Amino acid sequence: MKAVVFKGKDFPLAVTDFQKPKPGKNQLLVKIKTAAINHRDLWATQEQASVPHANGVVLGSDGCGVVDEVGMDVDPLWIGAEVVLLPSLDWGNNPNVQGDAFRILGNPDHGTFAEYIAIDKKYVFEKPEHLTDEEAAALPLSGLTAYRALFSKARLRANEKVLITGIGGGAALWALQLAVAYQVKVSVTSGSEEKLLKAKSLGALNTYSYKDAEWVSKAQKENNGFDVVIDSAGGDDFEKLIELAAPGGRIVNFGRTAGTKASIDIRKLFWKQLTVHGTTMGTRDEFLSLLEFIESRKVKPVIDRVYAMGDVGEAFAHMQEDAQFGKIVLTVAH
Ligand SMILES: NC(=O)c1ccc[n+]([C@@H]2O[C@H](COP(=O)([O-])OP(=O)(O)OC[C@H]3O[C@@H](n4cnc5c(N)ncnc54)[C@H](OP(=O)(O)O)[C@@H]3O)[C@@H](O)[C@H]2O)c1
Image (cartoon, rainbow, N blue to C red):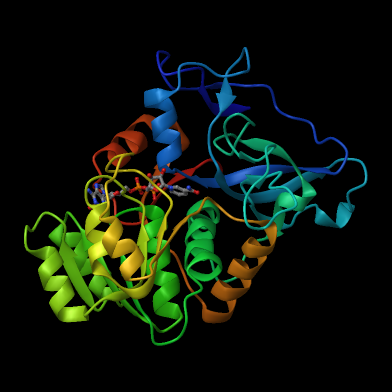
């Protein structure tokens, strides 16, 4: 089969022939139709020196496809089902935090940028009917991350005000769509005026350019504090989020696009009684809740561009430019 194989940052990312997997006990063989790119795929190609497989690892955490074959102890009625895959592998028993065995599908386990994947049945779910193949591929990793951040961590309630940073991010945009569907007031930041306009058209109330030196005072004046802040940028601007959080506010971070280090004013943290949560991905139960949420409210993700799997290099370059608004999807097969 053809697959996007990664061997380490010093090797070119290549679409090559790779051994087609066989479904083992409790596994299904899924013929992938579409897959989506996440920042972690890009970072692997920039930062990861090697992989634990001699032949390389198939990248890709997000995928949608059709069940082609089943392994032992799997109901053959699955064959032909249109499915999406949960990329949180072996989360563990504690819903609050993943255990030591936790992995994200697609590095070190072989992922979705391939014609076929063999995967345990517990990670396979029927594709929401209202989504196209491209939209379904755009769902799992960032949709799940955003869902857990908003509802399990921040415990978002009706009538609260939410701020989401860097709306060009895949998970940030999912957070906007989920929060708008939940009918709360959402404000967003971006480095791009064009993305801010697009966010408005999706229901964002107030929008701010994080390149504008005055954006924090404008946001403070117009919103008088945010109950929930969803951040995937980190870095120097994290301090501003402490400033913008309302007393009793919750700040949830799941990324470090702008930097891994941040400094904060501790006085504001304790005096405003803020809570800062870290989060990563989500559990199987949260994925089921996400599926139910988007099906009942007919939420559809925004797709930025669709590339053929053979053009994966161009797709990665597009993500590197931060030019996207919505998910970047690869078509693997029709
Ligand atoms: N922990 C997890 O489970 C998890 C899951 C998903 C993502 N993540 C993390 O979340 C981050 C985004 O990932 P993604 O795949 O969603 O990313 P992505 O689609 O590649 O988006 C990156 C976005 O970051 C925004 N950005 C860049 N510099 C910024 C700054 N100084 N302040 C605010 N925003 C800034 C840009 O938004 P604008 O273009 O609007 O400026 C850009 O579009 C990454 O750090 C990723 O590792 C973590």
